[in-house]
Image (cartoon, rainbow, N blue to C red; front, side, top):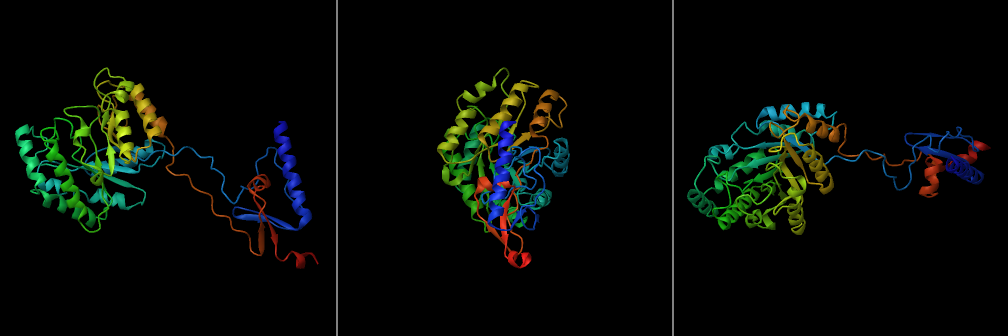
Amino acid sequence: MAAQQSRVRFRRLAVAAVAAAATVVLAGGSGFAEGTGTARAADPPVPVPAVAPVPATPLPLPVKAAVPPFGAFLDSGPLGVARMAGLSSWLGGTEVKIAHTYLPGNRWQDIEGAPGFLDVWAQWRRAKADRMLVLNVPMQERNEDNVSDGEVRSLLRQGAAGAFDRHFRTLAERLVALGVPDTVIVLGWEMNGSTYTHRCGPDPANWKRYWNRIVTTMRSVPGQKFRFDFTPSRGRDAVPWTECYPGDSTVDIIGMDAYDQPSGLSFDAQVKEPYGLQQHVDFAKAHGKPISYPEWGLFRNGDDTEYMTRMLAWIDEHKPLYNTLTDYCPHGVWQCADNPKSARIYRKALYGRTATPTPPPPYKPPANCSPLELGDWVEYWLGGKLCIRLDWWSRTR
């Protein structure tokens, strides 16, 4: 209470001192009080200015911490776009900024972005400048057909020699034509595993040459602004993902797909394991690249509240360029009823949050008024800037 009273007295003395020198006007925000002498509204009971202060350097805004750009994989097709509004509503209006989808890897015509497949995603992205479209792009057709290591090695050699360039040029041209030339391309994701035909393990050297060839081909298309995201799965998997890294010149983002697995592995172990979460952050920092989490979510350990709590805190601490939760069972929280406790944690963390604080409008003095520069500290307690009316002499004669 004593501190509050001393601040009120300081404010009154400041007003009186300036009033003795000239006729003043208090200007703040969109309105102001004008007249002669020191006539003002009574001071409020606590030292909070009746009019928002507008110092020369704006004071920090008392807003909720900004939420890192986030999204969720909700479906590969048009349903994925339609469901984003529902997810936002479930999160109390927090806006979903990231749309994430995957090109099918069955045939090359799919990887080229078949006409009609990407239209609705492009329309969503174009609607607001601060949105991001993330697109997973396979590097080979028959991408989930259990192709043998020998055939993968042959395909990687062909790709490195340019046999498939035309498919990626077609995709790049279609994305530019759709008005989404800044799409984030998650190319050949989880290459350190054993699942996909675009895996790295059978021939890392040619895998890297092939990646570089694809990126060079897509970047050659006029109008493109693509960013390429190198995204292994967390941990060593079939091969250390560092052996697949194609080089800084063709990688813009270093991502990681990080699910809660295997069974019994604690979050601390997921951080500290070889090629785990900490090594991912350190590797990206050493190469001067932002990080991302294109896929993350629950998995082998069920409704794991510690994982959900710690992963959200990890994301908040390390500020990835974007993150997208995989929102279907067993990984998800909104479309999956199997994880109610983790769903509550996720929802509470993101509920009602805004992505960017709104800055105050720039100070504009009233007409015929010359502002006095009294310093930030005085202006804060005065509740705004003081200015001298240029017509004060004629008004008082």
